[in-house]
Length: 154
Image 1 (cartoon, helix red, strand yellow):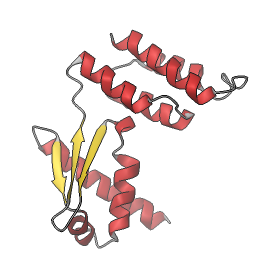
Image 2 (cartoon, rainbow, N blue to C red):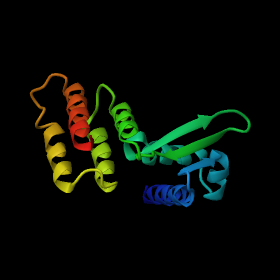
Image 3 (cartoon, rainbow, N blue to C red):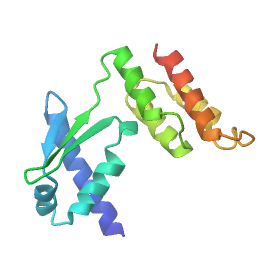
């Protein structure tokens, strides 16, 4: 299992380097070619994409299927406040688990959109223990996170 975790890290780092080298923060890859490059199964590439390049972590993935199919990975551009809030609200959706919420706020902290204190306050406000008596805690968590992010980032 350690080998799989390690190869996932290597693939993710490789894709991140590709993205960071581009001015438009967008890369086009072919899953099979990348799998050949790293001598792994295409499903390993899927695993990396679905766990490391999520909207919660600041990425959008578009997939084109077919014989010449490819995958576009875009790093979200947060230059516009309204676009940033729109994308974050889309990522949050109507219901959100604690782990998904944590990924979003970790990304905001790492990108320096929120301070460490804001990160900690949000984290404690939306954790399962705080929301333990709520019937629909994932729905409440999503609404709370949207509200807090809107206030902080506006």
